[in-house]
Length: 188
Image 1 (cartoon, rainbow, N blue to C red):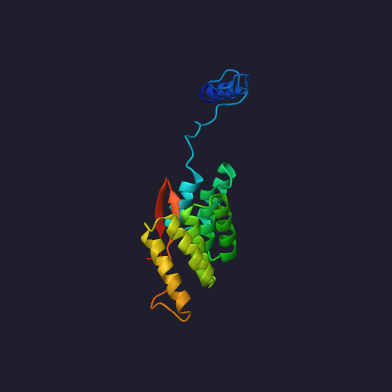
Image 2: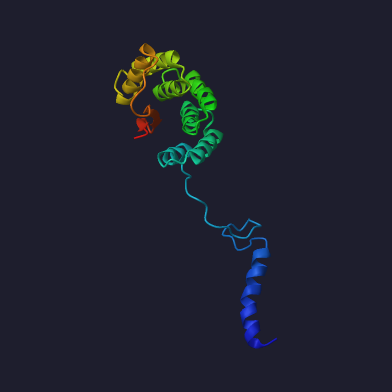
């Protein structure tokens, strides 16, 4: 073996032997493992990721993020409502309804779940129940949300006149909560 080649292989051999030793190359002398990469910082909350994906129109990915959040946080009212909203956007009305009803069972005062359940019921053409649900959401919200007021108005108009059809496609607004605020998801 040439001295030049031996000079290049010697540092590599030294590192391999050091990695195999009891302390390895890790800064933790008691560790039998080679050093790893730096540990990650705090991970981003699955709900936050899901909300951002919903805003971007990536409903399937948002649903997966919400399921990860459920795995970490449990089935909280926020998580259940978010899963229901994602399923609604994906057109999975039965699953959306089940999740939103579970969210309401968890917290009977959670306005976004009531509103979004009303949207699901309107999509399923269950107008009388949708109107009652929107009335509950409107009362719990103290009439402060324009989108809930508009949803209630549309449901009552359709209830009074079953043949009522808007000129445009219905524009029911989904409402969700993030960091203590109501954020609106609309089709506009």
